[in-house]
Length: 471
Ligand SMILES: Cc1cc2nc3c(=O)[nH]c(=O)nc-3n(C[C@H](O)[C@H](O)[C@H](O)COP(=O)(O)OP(=O)(O)OC[C@H]3O[C@@H](n4cnc5c(N)ncnc54)[C@H](O)[C@@H]3O)c2cc1C
Image 1 (cartoon, rainbow, N blue to C red):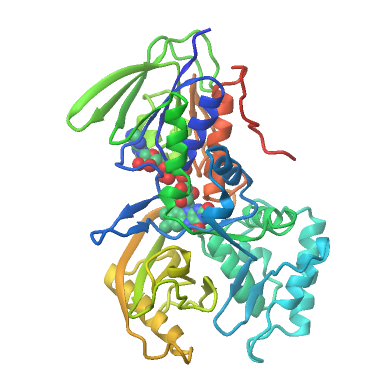
Image 2 (cartoon, rainbow, N blue to C red):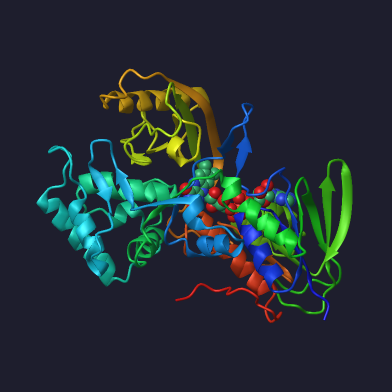
């Protein structure tokens, strides 16, 4: 039987996961990516000085089982490319959330919560506050980590003490959902907590990339794809889709239709090619634009209705730090944020394989502020942090790069109806925004890519890799 020709439009993490899965199932796969590099929002670029810098800091956690599986699949060792540390969202003062490995099995979380919130007296969690946290989380456990669809994270945590909300819930919510508490979906938040905190040993660990994002997975995935006969093109943008034959409904059924005729552009040249199946792995607005008129208006409307949250990353350089020397006591620290001090996290890039002395300050759910004001506000925040350390006080800091991704993630709001994976006959969508239990994350993107390719190749045979996550 002739291998089906599958086109994947978009070479982000979802598209590459779909391509690997489809190739392993015996399809003849082509990936078209319009940018010069693969990786989508999670890639690196080369600066004018020749450094590799990420398109924003990315953190993974131990519960990202599909990302880890696909890294191993293409020959990478997660242990070599990721720094694994226990979940640690403590502030400079030592207050905040910390989940060290205590070897206590199922009691690990309780013990971790108990030990968290230490630090100076004014910031430490009091016994009564810890007890309230225990009662509320026990309630979540009894409800099997589910809540009404219209509940926000703020609603869910209304009975928690403000200190616990500020030190624990806010950093977790903003880092996982990139959406402010009052607008963030309680249901998705509980799902993330369940996966991370109760997902077994190591699920809550932070996995911090030690190599530039493009080398973390996209480059190795591309190499594997090419070695296994897939075609991977950059600089190639899909312009339009047209299904030859009669279009009958929107559930991805076969129905004897002709192949998809896809027009693409490379430089100023246009091409037309036919494919048996198409997976849209591009962002939702572009996917909606590509749909032929009248094919699935409901899908288009839900894709166009998504709202977005920005993430800004301000890279600053501490002068005079020797190679290999850390600036901060921990690779990542939480920051107290406010309108004037907007960053919530700081990472020390030197020990993570970046230039010595480079710090990355992350502003999640970044609201309107012009780039220059944002850079200055974050720089001041970094200076104030360093001033609290006797050995760092007086060191010179300068901003080196500010990146603002306006559409970093979709706003993960209560009751949000996300576009489905099935779009039309022999046409599927994948990406972090597609219907699923997770917020916009690498893991959500990768799981969605795997699932779309499985649907597209259903009954196709080989299944050369274990495609489904166990359990
Ligand atoms: C600054 C920042 C920080 C983040 N931090 C984290 C984090 O810490 N942890 C985490 O898990 N997630 C994080 N995320 C989210 C994560 O990056 C995304 O969830 C993930 O990369 C989405 O992958 P995707 O493949 O679904 O989409 P995308 O990465 O958007 O890929 C879509 C691809 O389609 C291409 N494309 C578009 N139109 C066309 C066309 N017509 N033809 C061909 N190609 C096309 C695009 O160029 C792009 O490469 C962060 C995102 C940002 C921006």
